[in-house]
Length: 467
Picture 1 (cartoon, one colour):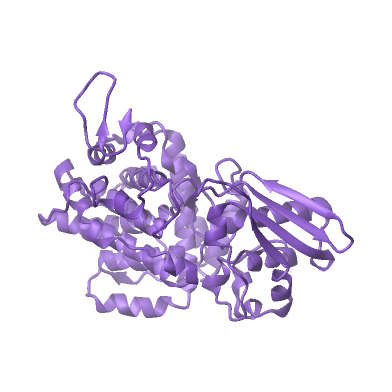
Picture 2 (cartoon, helix red, strand yellow):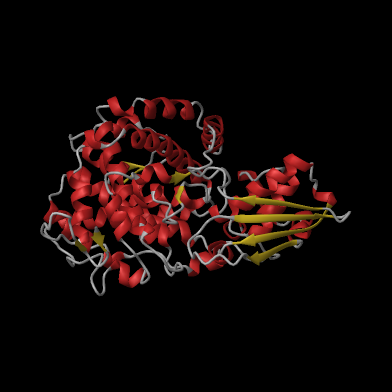
């Protein structure tokens, strides 16, 4: 059994290994052939989703300013931006692409870890693959996918160790390990070099929950920091710099600092048998994942009972603690898109009015729509007594109609989760909608074909063109 605190006690009485070593050996030494087909299939599905969402995020209003700032940090032509193909140094490109991928709250999530791990991992990995390709060392599609899968294992194992309430913005803080892990794998680091770089992540921990509390555009910026941190740590390690050896389990290591209530043992024990990429969840709606069970529950009641917004007297949502903290915020007059995507009353009102929640539901006109605001004011948020501080479900929706009828729906697995997966047709429709945001004619189909054949591609960066 693997023990939290950094040691492994094998049944054969073997020498103990630090948790840091166990994780890095899995990352660096797992053969590509040992990755099962189920993990590869899931990686293709969520790579497509992540890149499409990243393209759509190019439309965020803050993107132009962030790009100007990133260009001022230094010139270089190592990696392209998703959507317009502009060239930047690899770390800057990873920063902008990760920002875009999280900007619309549409990127996949690992629910047990509460980490949007694909966003920083793929942003950093693709930037690194492009840099290597321009240096005459192309990364094959199979090698690229293995790096992404194993980087996700690192990030999600660390994130899922949390047992207490989120104190830092875990999608970025744990997510940076995915970015670093994928790059370290692509660089072919040995154990000592990989450990040196992992320790250098500690001084770059990105992600305050204050940004989430305020619904600030700093949230996707923090995801950019996570992707950038992975590349910077790898560059420093390759140059001979080294961080603390007990970067994860030391008295001032990552877990004690960010997740003081944690249990790493189950995740370490599952390495090589549970592939974290198979536990990712799609986000069918461009809003915080903790809003999705409520949207799903409202949609089920609308479909089963013909509920209409005009017939509604009240909506009561019985929420687990994580939802109360992350999306249990009140409607307010001066809504921004960033705030509204994390506001349950708003997204439930839009669901009742339009039947779903899509990219268009966060337009300036709808953010100030009187009918939406009046309906949102009828949505009550109530705790459900759940003691699991990190549970996404269950959630219960109760709708009371004007005639006194009460309708009830319990959601045990939200649409898009591994237990209730998003149908393939809906996955493809989402990809096409994301590309339509910036009018890239035919690129959605081209990307789908490229990812389907990625395992045979000699150069992943050349295959995954997003401009």
